[in-house]
Length: 549
Image (cartoon, rainbow, N blue to C red; front, side, top):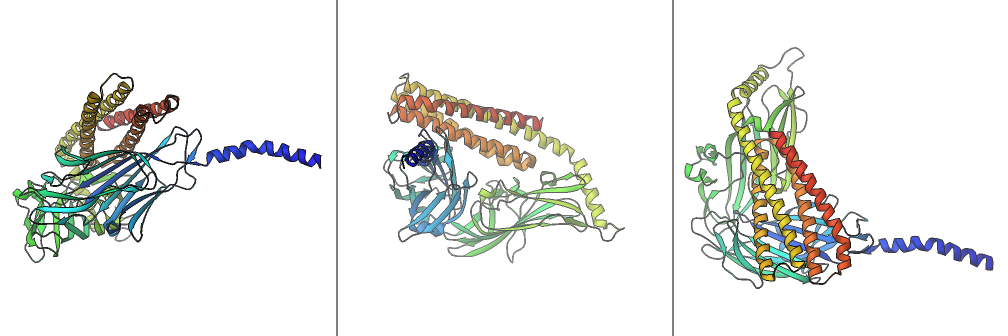
C-alpha cells in the first residue's frame, strides 16, 4: 500500500508542472486596450463605420482571446448591409435580440496572444438609410457614438466625419467639432469605459444651399466592360436607385473608372442619349435627365471609354484583363453584377460574369482577372474579327506610346509623392512616440503635450488621407501596382496598430495603471516590432520606386 502511495505521489509531482502550464496558458483576455470608432457619412447618405480594436496581453503567459460582443440599437439590424473583418480567420456575425442588435467578433478557435504582444482587429461596416430628412436642408440620425462592448475598454476614440459643406447643428457632451481635411468632424475620447456602457445620440446636420447631398438606396447595378473589334473598351454602368429624401433629386455622383466626366454618355430611359453637361462634369456628377421625387425608383445608364492599356496586357500568348469589382456608386448596392462582353473570335479561360449581394466600395481592392485567347471557327480558319482585334490592339500600343509616356510620367510623379507622404507620416509617428517619452520624463508640460499631440495627429491623418487618395489613382493608372500597394497598406495598418499599443503603454505608465517594471518588460517587444515593420515598409517603398523607374 505504501509502495502504491509513493508511486502516486511521484506521478503527481511529475505532471504538476504541465498542469500548471496548461492552467496558465488558459488565461483569458479581460479588457480591450484601445477602441477606435470612426464613422464617415458620404454624399449619398451612407455611413461607413471603421472600427479598430487593439487587445494587449499584459499577462506573463499566453492568453486566449474570447469572442467580443458589440451592442447596437435594435433598429440598426436591417441597416447593416456590408461588412469586412481582419485578420483572416476572424468571424463577424450579427443577431437580433429583443432589445438590441448584437455583433459578435469571434477569433479562430484556440486563438492565443503571446505575453507582451497584441492583436488589432479591424471591422468595417456600411449602414444604409441612417439619416432622415427633417425639413428643408436639415437631417437627423440616431448615431451609436460609443457602442457597448462585452469587455471594459481602457481608451475609446470616437469620431463622425461629414461630407464637405455640411455641418453639425447639434452639440454633444464630451465631444468637440472641428474641421479636419475640409470635413466637419465630431470627436470624443473616453477612458476606462466599463463593460456594457454605450452612448447613442440624435445627431442633426445642416447642408449648405447648392451642395450635393442625397439620401439614396441603390437596389441594383450592373457594370459591363465591352471590348470592340478595334481593341477599345467601353464601360456601361446601369444604376437603379430609390430616393428616400424629402427633396427632388436631379443629379448623381457616381464612382466611375474615368476622370473625364465630360466624356460620359447619359442614357436615360425613353429619352435620347446625351453627353454629360460640362457644369456637372466639373463637379464629378451626372445629370439624371429627370427630377426624382421621394419614394420614386429610377434607372440610369452611363457609357464612357477607358484606356485599354490600363486594364489589359499580353502575356504568354494570351491577353489578360484586370477588372475592378467595386460598384459604380459610393454606397451599398443590394444586387450587383459585373460582366465582360467579348468581340467575335475570342473566348475566355475563366468566368466572364460575377454577381454579389451588398457590394460596396470595400470591394475596391478586389478584381476579376480574366485570360483571353482566340476562339477558332474551325481547325484552319481564324475569324476575321480576331485579326482585326489583334492588329488594332498592336496599333493601339504603337500609336499610344506618346500617351503612355505621359501616363508613365504621371505615375512617376504620383509614386514619388506617395513615398514622400509616407516618409513624412513615419517621421511624424516617431515625433509622436518621442513626445510621449518626453511627457513621461517630465520634459514637456501637460498643455504643451496636448497641443503638440493634436498637431502631430492632424499631420498623420492628413498624410494618411493623401496616401489613400493616391492609391486608387495609381492602381487605375497602373494595375500592376495593386499587389505592392496592398502589401504596403497592410504593413501600414500593422505599424499603426503597434504604435497605438506603444502609446497606450506609455499612457498606462503615466496614469500609474502599470508598474515601471511591467512597462520595461513590454517596451522592447513593442519597439522591436515597430522597427521590423518600418524596415519592411522602407523596403516596400524602394521596390515601389524601382517598379516605375
